Image 1 (cartoon, helix red, strand yellow):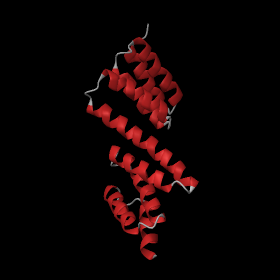
Image 2 (cartoon, one colour):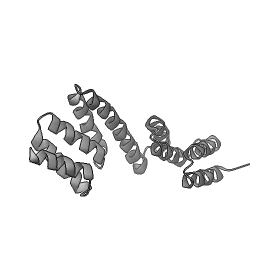
Image 3 (cartoon, one colour):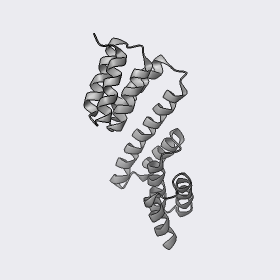
Image 4 (tube, rainbow, N blue to C red):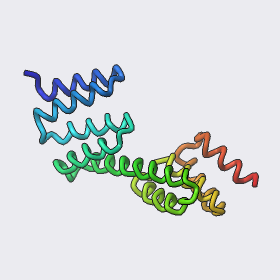
Length: 164
């Protein structure tokens, strides 16, 4: 009979081969053998996140945190996932065109949860500029460029704002 560690190793092989579905299956098999191992849930969450299955990733992280509420790494990953989920919702609001303020409010939350989320900052700056808050947009873009000085979209947006 296989052990949890053997299933984890098989999951890593699958990830190396970019077979994320198989990796997810292997993580689930490891969890079936030891549902008290928080690291198995964490690893499953990371794999779901790579596939942009954020709801599944968040669910797995909640289980990991239930088992290890004191783990800073798990807490940070969970917050990063929540920020990504919020950013997705904000983008859908922004695409509606008439929900910019809702999107801005959500993006503020996302950036607090994950201050390194450059995509959230970019969308935030874009929406600020679109709503006539040029100075705040420029400041947000400088913050983003402090994280990633060569961020192509941020450089382009900053250039466009300054040319107006």
